[in-house]
Amino acid sequence: MRIGAHVSAAGGFDGLIERADSLGVQAAQFFLSSPRTWRYRPIAAPKAGPVIESARQHGVERLVVHASYLINLGSSDPELVTKSSALLAAVMATSAEESLSAVVLHPGSHKGYGFTESLASWRMAVAPALSFASATTQLLLENTAGGGASMGRSIEELDQLLQLCERPGAVGVCIDTQHLFAAGYDLRDRVLADELAEELMSTFGSVSAVHLNDSATELGSAHDRHANLGEGEIGLDALMSFVHHEVFQSADLILEVPGAGNGPRVEDIALLKHALANS
Ligand SMILES: [Zn+2]
Ligand SMILES: [Zn+2]
Image (cartoon, rainbow, N blue to C red):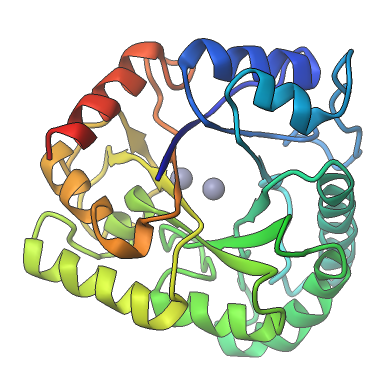
């Protein structure tokens, strides 16, 4: 397991690598282009040398891109699907070119369509991005909190979507602990949490990334609201016992917690390191 955090990409790759370095994390997640606009303008390249080398010089082994929240491959609006498919492919192309580790994608929302009905169009929409995916630069499908007809709210749905990708090794999953809890998986119950980890193991073999977040909303709320570790409804002990399962052995544990409002802080990373070592 590597410890990671979502960091701001202000100042381009140099800025985000510096931020990851000052947090002391081995994995940095960031937006490659502004998540609020359809216009694709990747962040500035490092001043010196290739991205990966510059990251490694600062102890950052894994660079993980979070795809824009605007992207919806499951929509019943064909224009939105076309725009989404093109933006995801552009993000994936840059990520492959720079040898970044992965691109994390929220599968989308099937509003107006239904999950099963949306699958054929979803499969066509993800294809252009998949042509850039590889074992070096994986496309990771993230489980969702379950609100607004979101796709990927259960292990079964995530697996169905993954099957449609037909690129073993080049695709994988990112598991968000807050989204699991909001979707109704009770991580506080050791037996259920263990069964869930076993199910992840038998379904996916391994999990490439974890969005490690406590939950600001109750079990089954379907709301996507992250809380700092130990300050939410799941609690630190339950989170630690869950991520110690072997299915997460090679995963990047990425904090997406609010901190004091600006994202993960040094003390959030310290808390995680301490908890991992003592659980
Ligand atoms: Zn996400
Ligand atoms: Zn979330």
